[in-house]
Every structure is written in C-alpha cells, then in structure tokens.
Image (cartoon, rainbow, N blue to C red):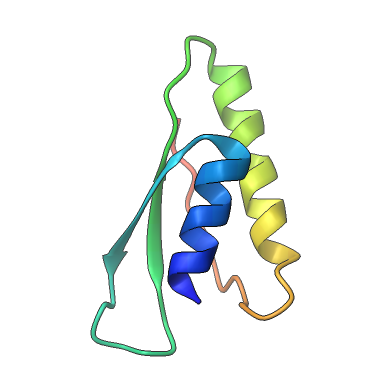
Length: 69
C-alpha cells in the first residue's frame, strides 16, 4: 500500500517521497515529501494539492500533516 501511494505521488506530482518514520508499524506510515521550485506560491500550492489527494485516498487515512516552505 505505501509503495503504491509513494509511486502515485511521484508520478502525478513529480515529487520525491520517502517513508521517514514508523517503518516498524504495519498500519502506520510517515511520509516525507520534497518539492523544489523557484516560487514559494507554486511549491505551497502543489503541496496543498498533494494533501488533498491523500485525503481523498479510498483506503488510506491521512491523520495529520505539516507543511513547511
């Protein structure tokens, strides 16, 4: 499941995605997503679209997120 989500985010949004914590827990994944751009507005908008895509995922549940630009 996690691999599928990571691949989908990478392909759809052209971002780097890594599982950064909770690898020992089979029902929890903590993902880090990185995006580089020359305008903060573009980066923030893209990251917000990613959050919305994760919220709409049919199987996984987004518990929380932090956004830093």
